[in-house]
Image (tube, rainbow, N blue to C red; front, side, top):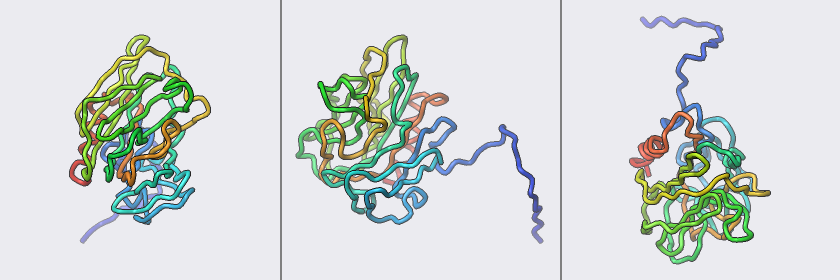
Length: 248
């Protein structure tokens, strides 16, 4: 015989563990979207402009912007489709640390300067770009705090990638690292403070404010961001990779 205790007690002990909806979430997660999780995307179908992706961390949602998305076991971008991330993706000039990763799959890598993840405003080069990940052919490129770089990593079609950027303040400078599938593939040091994105208050996946169109039929599977307050950059990327590597 099972015995159940029924109580209407409200527990306020802050030391009690919180069971998160995703293993990579901690108290400093800014947002976490997993497109194949019905909590984030209940319909498991295409998305109209204005539709919301629900944050697994229950902080703030993302919004389908500029054009609709189609569905093929993930959200698929047209050339002008984008997802506007929460405003917590915008960085302060004195930000101490930040990490963000996206899980994507490429269907075409013939384009030039195709947007994947962008936060910044076009103008004089990358002067007002806080961070960006983009492709040109099979080359993977990135930028942090106004400076752009070409990584040595070579992309291919038809497989899922975890691609992330971490930014950590070191003295007056920032150490930026580009990650692919849990491994650091490029690292650069740039001078602080973090540049302003001007009127752009949040990052976008897909169609971006620097180069415009995304890679043709780019597929989004997941996006995760963290303040890296209790995580190291390595641990943030590793935990996120552990969630997706057997699923995507």
